[in-house]
Length: 428
Image (cartoon, rainbow, N blue to C red; front, side, top):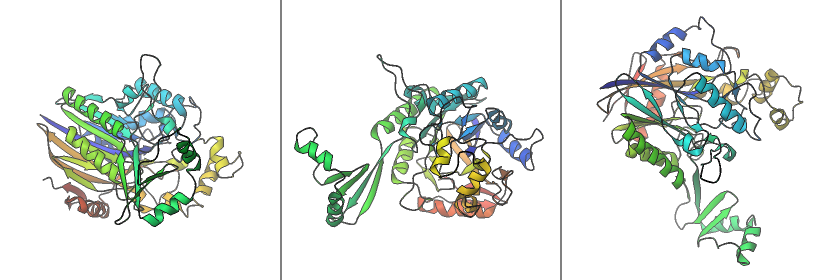
């Protein structure tokens, strides 16, 4: 049994692909279609104002013409993740509408659903040689976008499959007392004194949404995945292993280790490794807008981020009232002017960060349940092109991209060989 895979990262698509394609389109399409399983993350909602703008967004209120789904399919993709920080940009209405448009096109997707059970469940793709399962989840989300489970009393809530996490700041006695003196917990401490709340565990101090723990050694921060979200995911992987030949996990995350956006946080490393141990063949990370390292773990491969694939945020058609209000801009501001304001006329933000505009497409082969080959195809998104064309992917053969990824992967003990503009992961 031999099955081939290819994966692309975040696709924030806002423009139609021309009927005749664009320079480089056919080459890219041919590469994608040469594989059996062809994954991409859909980082937008797809509808025509079929939901209400949420109070917060994933950075831009992401709404794309449903016909752009046809363009994504034209590129050859057949397996899709829908759980990310933009899933809830237009509330439950936007999630339901996106699901409707996906199903109308018979697209196989995971990560969102009409209930938590539905959003957590694996999607299955039938190929000639194998049945492949996909589980989609995101750690970056507005809590209001999370799906809710259904029980015998009430209907569930449409939403995304959430991976929540906890951060504990281990601090010395001086900093612990400084945090206490801020009096953010004054009301809670009053409730504790009156018997309405349980005391904080000895040596711990919640401070708003932050948690501090007294330590005598070096100060450090620990992040850990929410136990319920982790266990739910592991159970879904185990079930998918019963029902499919191969299991893939797609995880969207913007969180980082300390101030370094190129390093995955501790909770994400824990989560991904647990997924492998439960039976995932490959874990596909995406979200931070740039590459992160690759880890070979117990016969499987973890990509902490494969980068973006389509990045057309600047040509989105509409933004809601809050977008302009948050920037103190008049409500009649045009989108182009809004984007100019946000980027300082192209002098700050993503538009000047070269790491945002390059990515890789991992391509691999599974034979009899084992990964036998793993290649990396660099992609360029056209950072230096004009806005109307920026964000469109082409194969680049850029060895600098592959060298950069190799450096990011060194701490995990992963080696990447480079030849003729293509990378090859040296499998253990």
